[in-house]
Image (cartoon, rainbow, N blue to C red):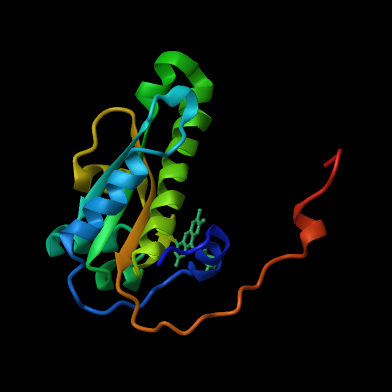
Length: 177
Ligand SMILES: Cc1cc2nc3c(=O)[nH]c(=O)nc-3n(C[C@H](O)[C@H](O)[C@H](O)COP(=O)(O)O)c2cc1C
């Protein structure tokens, strides 16, 4: 059964507690195939990279580099998103480094999060980490900037949480800011 986009938006919530069940590799492959074949990027340069982490030792190092956030240890899979700032800079110079490559990676992360939701997986976007440690742990090359970590696994609870968001008029305006 397919799910409407609106229902998918509603179904996604940050999940910080996971079952220890392994995520079937074919699910991961489907999610990443779907993201990498459709995500919009500046100039279609695809200035991002996704590193899939399942090795417990690597996960522990990432946990230590991310303020020891428990969901990183608990989740059986991590997707680590990098902005490929060199690739973007070749065409877009400073704007490529400071903005476009980061937006490319963020688009991929958000789409991956929704694709995981569709597959019955929970995710949590983690942005609080030490860039230099993550680069070192994962052997990132020149110009590769880590922008987010998505924790991925089967959620422990499927209870729907109420979303708290600012009022519409606080977030949207018409014709002027
Ligand atoms: C850029 C960004 C950085 C985030 N960093 C963290 C983080 O380091 N740790 C964490 O637990 N959640 C993090 N989150 C998740 C947010 O806290 C969460 O999306 C927000 O509270 C709304 O809740 P919801 O995702 O359940 O709708 C981050 C989300 C975004 C978009």
